[in-house]
Amino acid sequence: MVRTSMIVRTQYRIAAVLVIAVVLAGAAGTGFAADAAPATHTVLIDGTRFEPETLTVRAGDTVIWINNDPFPHTATAVAGAFDSESIAPNKSWEYTTKRAGVFPYSCTLHKTMKGTLHVE
Amino acid sequence: MKTTTIAFVSTLVFVSAVAVAQEAAPNDAQIASIVVTANQVDIDAGKLAKTKASDKEVRAFARQMITDHTGVNQSATALVKKLMVKPEDNPTSASLKAGGEANVKKLKGLKGAAFDRAYVDNEVAYHQAVIDALDKTLIPSATNEELKALLVKVRPAFVAHLEHAKQMQAALAKKS
Image (tube, rainbow over all chains, first blue to last red; front, side, top):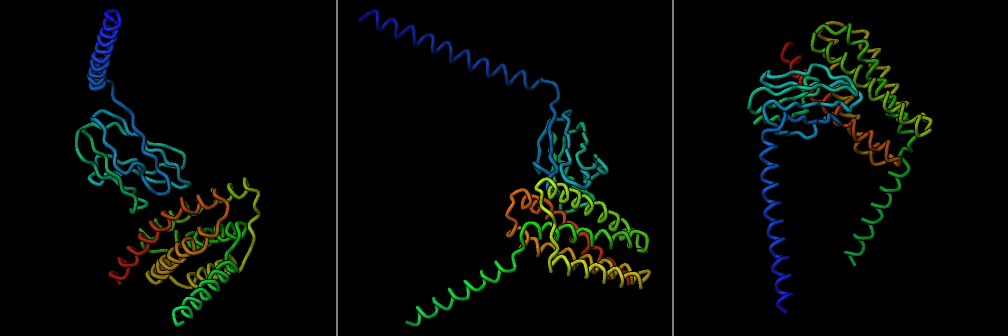
């Protein structure tokens, strides 16, 4: 009986240690991610739409627009921060973000296409 | 009794509407022909307008129509080949072709601002007609999933072209 309760207690202790370890690892992981190298994000241009239409990235991250349509498109910031000019079918264009802000953009060839890039 | 009669009449109307729709519904080979012809018609008009239009924006639009509709046709042709479907002429594709030829003939007789207006007016009507055909006939009738997906994928480009043409139409009307 005593032995059983001791085993149970030990199991609890092991479980508690594991839980703490996992929590610490998670926190450390998040901490490392915050300092990690800039990330790369993809916006697919398909069916005369930007997918996703809204993308949030961190300053310094790179965004790649891939044109999956059979005709050219552009990704052009309304206020002029960036402009891909014509992206041919099956080609892509990348932009490394510089400063934080909200950048609405569109395709100059198809004005129905709208997207927003949030840079944090 | 009255209710029964109304219900019966409604059913009859519905059934005949479906029968008509079925009779009119094009098959995939006919849809392929309609799509290729519709794009070609706009490419032909664009080829004329890219040099003949007097307005710079209209010329740029014409060049874009050639590029975009050529791209759509390349995709359509590649898919049709892959599916081993042979585009089949039908009354709709024949009427599109005849309409396109009549438009080019009419445009050839015009110049300057009159040409620009006639070209843009036709672009508005043409894109609206293609969108209506896509929504009412082509997309619902396509049986092959890949063909249907291609039609759905290119539809928003036609909407963008229509908006662009309408905006030019308004601008040209202000000019005159």
